[in-house]
Image 1 (spheres, helix red, strand yellow):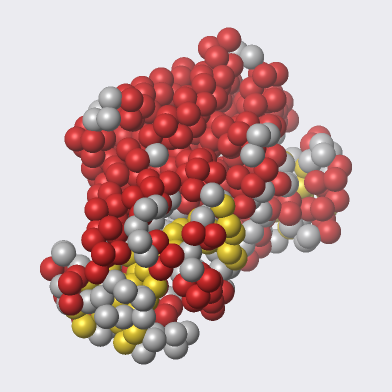
Image 2 (spheres, chains in turn purple, orange):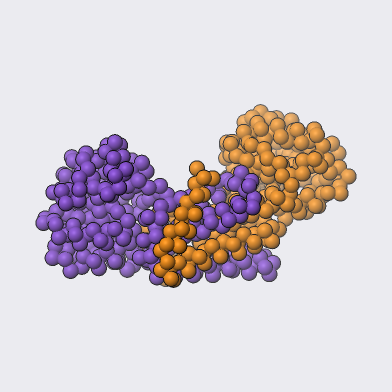
Amino acid sequence: MKVTIIGTGLIGGSMAIALKEMNLAQHITGVDCNKVYAEKAIALGLVDVIRPLEEALDADLIILAVPVDVAENMLPLIMNLISNQVVMDVGSLKKSLLDVVAHEANRGRFVATHPMWGTEYSGPDAAVSGAFIGKAVVICEKEQSDDDALLLVENIYRAFGMKIQYMNAIEHDLHVAYVSHISHITSFALANTVLEKEKEEDKIFSLASGGFESTVRLAKSNPDMWVPIFMQNRENVLDVLNEHISQLKKFKSCLEKENNVYLEALIKNANSISKIIK
Amino acid sequence: MKVTIIGTGLIGGSMAIALKEMNLAQHITGVDCNKVYAEKAIALGLVDVIRPLEEALDADLIILAVPVDVAENMLPLIMNLISNQVVMDVGSLKKSLLDVVAHEANRGRFVATHPMWGTEYSGPDAAVSGAFIGKAVVICEKEQSDDDALLLVENIYRAFGMKIQYMNAIEHDLHVAYVSHISHITSFALANTVLEKEKEEDKIFSLASGGFESTVRLAKSNPDMWVPIFMQNRENVLDVLNEHISQLKKFKSCLEKENNVYLEALIKNANSISKIIK
């Protein structure tokens, strides 16, 4: 199979590695408007060749792996240039993108997906082998995709070792606000909190240990990816963020009122997250 | 050397393992008012024998590894029962405990320490080998400890592979509010945020991936340890928590006003945490 990957960063690059390792792609064309990324993708052997978008669509499968705002602009363009190819995206939000292609004549060639894997790093250098094994992947509005297009994409994800879930786009975008977007906001805000303090206290980070690293790790994530996500999903993210601020205020109130009993109850409730996260 | 460890949980148990592995302790007596923990500590081979406190103080070194509120009650009792033994604690806060022993006749036998390592798990089962290697440890008010007592404790931590830092207790308690306590509060509150939503949405956690796990991991931490820490350090924790809430409100404001430029600036500022956390 010939594959074109548009966006040779963390996800596109890791998919290139997986496609080659599973022997699913015999030839991979890369498209990247970032010249440094394009050169790195070649140098790292992620893709076989780099081409401009218009010359890269003669593949069996086209994977769109760019930030959600860029994807929204590019997808209609791509849909107008393809005939029978399969197009899939791997973006973090689904509603807006699916609205954009809803009335395209060849809508059926498109499969909307979101593999639930990522790291705080970006670019071809961040691509890794084995990224997707055992992780969840969401396919949205599968009934709008042609059977053969859907099957091709499902088979690839199964070969990657992923657990496929089907959802509508609205449900997906709400869920990711809870299990991904709010974690990123808390992590960015936590980093800014301690960096603010660092101005006064030089030695503050000499004590940083595993717990701190774990909660601020996501704060290294790339704004080019996350600003569009937060803005596109702003209503869901605002709902969760308001709930999170009110949960933090409960802790604040316990401390202010020295209410040990309620503080213990809040922590015990939080402990039940271990039902979910082993 | 004969060592007595009071509190055979995560830290006490991991110190027992390290002391035996480094051949620093030939015999370890455990003290634990929790009978289940005491039996497990024996069964796991962490300690050689379990004894009541009053019969366990005939050791060269006594390590107090209990929650900070319990430590405050026990330390004066221990100081009154010892003669020339060295006593050290490993608690997360230092000011209050040091105030408690400040006027003890044999204050010099006590060394106040805080090894900057922990996990979200507790009890003897949670104790692990190699816990302290490469981590920081703070020794507070070292000038109040006898030279031989300080040297013994320093040599143990050096043998564990730890990097020793010296601070006064006030400075220590402020720093840990930033690099440890706030991370735990955000994690507890994040868990409560998503658990609140889970009541409505069954499938929410089926998508939880690495980023979410990383930010809520600490929410599994034990309230018996953390309620006393937050309460004892409440003024510092409240300062940081107020700052954190105001940082979160900046993100909220960006979303409400669709201010992409400021949102990007907030994220770029947060990215500079990578100077500190590799």
